[in-house]
Length: 357
Image (cartoon, rainbow, N blue to C red):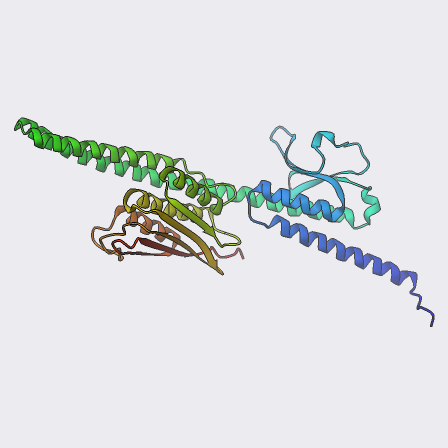
C-alpha cells in the first residue's frame, strides 16, 4: 500500500507546531533553572548552563547595566569573554528587561545565525530576557529585604548590648563597694574574695560584649540560611573542640530574610549556652520540614539543666528567654527538654511564609 501524502500546508503546520512546542519546552526549562535556590550568581550560572545546552551555543554571558551607562559582567559560561569574537554573525545580544526597565543584556555565541534557527527564535530570546529580568529583580528585592531585616536586628542587638553593659556595670559597682568595705575593715581574705569575683565579672562582661559585637556584624550568606548555619557550626567546632554535626534535610528553604535571621540567632544562642554551661562532647543540629512546617533540632550530651525549662519557669536561664523571645517573632513554638546529666534537647517549629498570591 502506498504511503499517504500530506499536503504541503499540513506539513508546514506540523513543523510550526513542533517549533512552538520546542519553544515552550525551552521556556519551561529556563524558568525552572531561574527558580532554583541560591545566590544570584549561582542561579545565573545554572541558567547559562541550561540555556547553552538548549540552543546549542558555544558560550553565553549576562551583563547588568551600570550607572555610567555601561554594563558589568556578572556571569558567563563557555569561552572567556575576552576571547569571544563579538563581530561574528552568530553573536546575539538580547535585552534583559523587568516591566519597562532594561536591567542589562545577555549574550549568546551561537554555532549558526539566529535566522537559521526558526522564525520563533527571536521572540523566544526576548521572552527569555524577560524571565531573566524577573529573576534578577527578585534577587534585588530579596537583598533589599534582607538588608532592612538586618538593620532592624542590629537595632535590637544594640538595645541588648546597652542592657547587657548596664547590668554588668551595676553588678561590678556593687562588687567594688563590697571590696572597698573589706579593705576598710582590713579584711584581707574578704578583699581577695571580692577582687576575685570582680575579676570574673569583668571577664564575663568582656566575653558578652565580644559576642554581641560579633552578632552586630551579622551577615547571612547569600547562599541562604543552610550555608550560614554550616559556617556557624564549623566555627563553633574549631573554637570549642566539641564535635558538632549539622544535617540539613530541607531541599529548599523559601524563608523570608527576617525568618532566616531569627532562626540563625536561635541556633547561635543555643550553641552559646552549650559552650558556656553544658560541658558537652557532642552536639547535633538537624534542619528539616514537612510541607510548610519547619523544624530545627539542637541537642547535646552535656550536663543538662538542674531546673525544669518549662514555659515561664522562674529563674530560667537568660539564653532560654532570648530564644523564646525570638521564637515569638517567628510566630513559632519552641520546646526545651533537659534533665541533669542527660543533656539538653531544643526543638524549634515554625511555618514557612505563605506563597505569593
